[in-house]
Every structure is written in structure tokens, then in C-alpha cells.
Amino acid sequence: QAQLVESGGGLVQAGGSLRLSCAASGRTFSSNAMGWFRQAPGKERELVAAISWSGGRTTYADSVKGRFTISRDNAKNTVLFLQMNSLNPEDTAVYFCAATNHAQPMGAPVYYDYWGQGTQVTVSS
Image 1 (spheres, helix red, strand yellow):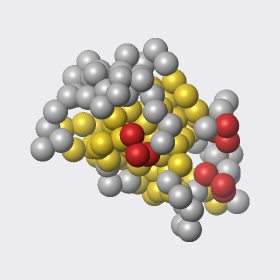
Image 2 (cartoon, helix red, strand yellow; image 1 turned 90 degrees about the horizontal axis):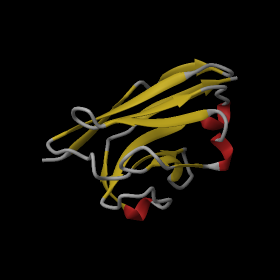
Image 3 (cartoon, rainbow, N blue to C red; image 1 turned 90 degrees about the vertical axis):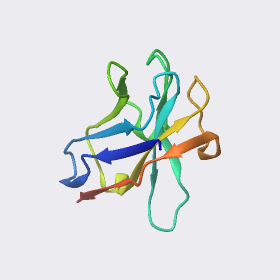
């Protein structure tokens, strides 16, 4: 059974950094685009960043451009990363790793077929 497991969340002060990781098991996602989404309390789940199967194409939400970097390693089991710098309290949310059956990054959650359980990121002011 395919599974995505996130790690790396936590509590950080404003201006700090965190690096999220997502490990795949049960199958490989090396041919699938993947993405990071987040959901804050009372808000809809939104795309943070997505990356194509090869890593050659990425897309970011305007709110994180220049601060966050998505990357992936297809060498073994597919691993997805999100480097988050210059964090601010508005970045506080549960962050989810997801994979789509499309090869290119997709913006809407509806296109993603596999989801992790999420990891909490809290940024204090």
C-alpha cells in the first residue's frame, strides 16, 4: 500500500527556518509530480509548492516565492523536501505531502491522489 510520511515540522520563531521531508513507501513516485500543501485552522487546503517528476519544473504560491524551495530525490524511494526560510506566523499550518498521477505539477488538491498525514508547523512572533 502506497504511503507518504512527512517529518521535520515543529515550532520555530519568526525569521527562522525548517526543512520538511516526505518519504514514500509501498511504491515509487519517481514518475509522478508531487507537491506540498498546507491548511491553517478554518481555511482551505492550499498549494505551497509543486514539482514535476524529474524536478525540472516547479511552481510556488506567491506567498512563499523566494522563501521556500521544493526539491526531490528519486534515487531510492522518492523523497520530497521543502526548505522553508524567513518563516512568519502566517506560515503556521499543517503541511501535507502529496503525489499526483500527472507528470507535471498541478495546483489544485483535487488532482492529487496520494496524501500524507501532515506535519504541524508553528511560527511564533
